[in-house]
Image (tube, rainbow, N blue to C red; front, side, top):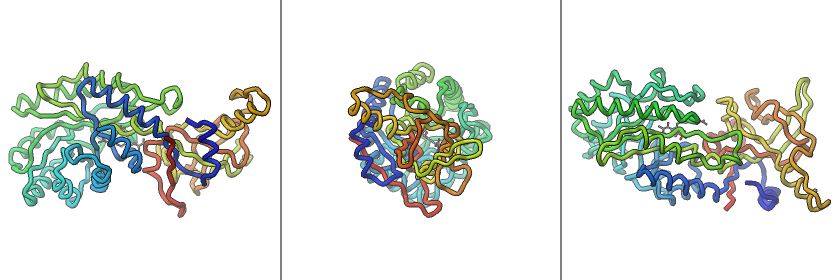
Length: 401
Ligand code: LLP
């Protein structure tokens, strides 16, 4: 991802910033669309993962749809050229204004999460003289074996309609003249690396579909949400997620009825690996038990480690790429990584919070003030979750072709 040419360009840019490798994004999109195409599956990109305009532009060009969780995400998707008919609108708390906006744009589908939401959408659709296409987001009570903050399909989570409430929901839908039930929707969580959770989802979905059919309810589409995880530990080795095995799981275990379409809402797996947060070492401070490597990037630029104890690979790219190549040109021999003195650091940011820590006990080549440090796999839920806490400037983004 970081050639010497790229790093030479970085020398002129003020840190911290996000760097996106657009050629990797394009390759990822190519694998994604060809794998989904093989099975006839329809993919929506979850804008919440990264709504940077250039990223959206590439994703739109790949011909996939959009998955939005706010009126502003729908606006951004449409401004980027996604077709209204490809937009799914999810979220437990849609405002009236957002619902009316989405109705007027004639989006593909509202993923509905409660009985009250159905009542409100029905009323607002009546007022605007439209019929709302609705999918029921059902909580399948499946454990995705991921961090509890990004687990969404357990009964205890706020998301979706519990199966026990479905009978009442069907009665409500019969009375809701401005709603057309077109699908069922699930999303069990994010950063799911154990594909067997998706197999459990397929089995649950088949049961629910049979249950609905027995009540004479037939649906046009099933939307299984997103959640496919990425390899945070080995970004170079697994740059592109194994979309093929993921889709095959659904092909093998989810029963689709005639003309029924299967939809996905993928975010992280599309955007994570193409992005890195690039910063500089400000200070190296010897603590009592550890060495602190203090960066000019913090939890304001990338909150995942502070919020979810998430692991991101940290690299001293000045030492690992630049100094290595300089030594090669100077002495005619290549420095292998590991040749430089490896030192253990707690890598932290400048924000006034002890949780502002990117990683503890990280082995890095001996790091000097001014070295460029990359925090990898940050293309999803990175820039988009950044803040201006401590009155910091909104983080900028640069792109490699
Ligand atoms: N569909 C729905 C309804 C969702 O809630 C989400 C993510 C997705 C699709 C996309 O999931 P993905 O393919 O990206 O896993 N900020 C957290 C992740 C939160 C995910 C929220 N929902 C993180 O940094 O790990």
